[in-house]
Length: 464
Image 1 (cartoon, helix red, strand yellow):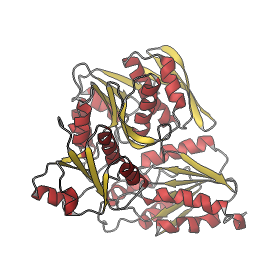
Image 2 (cartoon, one colour):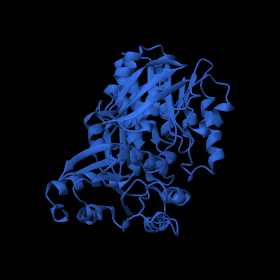
Image 3 (cartoon, helix red, strand yellow):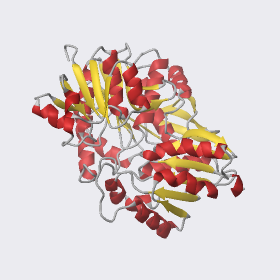
């Protein structure tokens, strides 16, 4: 990357790929990319100078010096095949991120099954507040920044590390964050032992002067850390964590907590985002502040200014007395944490969940966990599985999941085949005071705004 080149992205509209493309455009590289459809993201990149192609065709890679692919791109993609035939180097997204990390003095890589985007976004807010002007590449739209990536002039690059296909082992960070380890991405990993082994390798990639910031509330993280000789800071809510949150309490739509480090009380932080999981995420920024000798008041200010990430407990609006919240949660652990936070905020309101399962492999591997993660919901609506890049698995469906949840818990569960039909079907069941979550990582993200519009139009009036 010692000279300005033409870099082509297959699947440039993805949130992770678009962040890299945006940074490379800022650095003066010629960027092109393709995606199946035109979106706000691709239009934004085009406005910044990228050449965007709708659809994947062999001719799209003509003139490219390197082709970047995400884990979602299949080997038989026509652009991948054309690049191979033309001897154009093809690299995974993580390798490009690793190269960008070399441009900066220090890389901070945030890994974990859950909470990466929120944790990375909080770090970005704190570093900006502290005047570090970081480069940031995030897997979500940060509300306070209005983007998912930008190139700063400072010494730090902060990014999410994607463990889903093992490609995070291509990164070269100085500081590693591990938020948690869970049974996830079982389409790639054989099981939890292989996942732990990869996290061990990831931790061991940091240099001798680096540090691991790890969540001590997660027993699997503890197991991995026990086998590492790397210097570390353990954070969490447990009394044996050197950096710990105390006196945690719900405060409006957010959460307030105290911070202790090695027995010394540092102060209190008021987050505008809810849930104990966000408290843990915030502690990562406090740990970085300690490591980098930042003023605690600056860390506190950065965290208190943090306003969240798109599709993470995002309140879309309240119409006809019904509040609609959109959330990206698609793994049982994430769903459970989100709904527990919701119940703490709204203890007396009915919680209705519209959920679209994501990937056949995940639904199959975690079927039992899915049956127990919606316990805080008063009413549950399920649609069929969003396949992502996967082919169907015989016997695995949203309808089967709905049936198993109902049999296991006795909850009120409805199944609607087509996600687009969810608002029309569910709206007549809603009543004043309900809190409705649209939840999942696929097409469900478009349903929340539609539901708000329907409520605004008085479509729920007959149910009162």
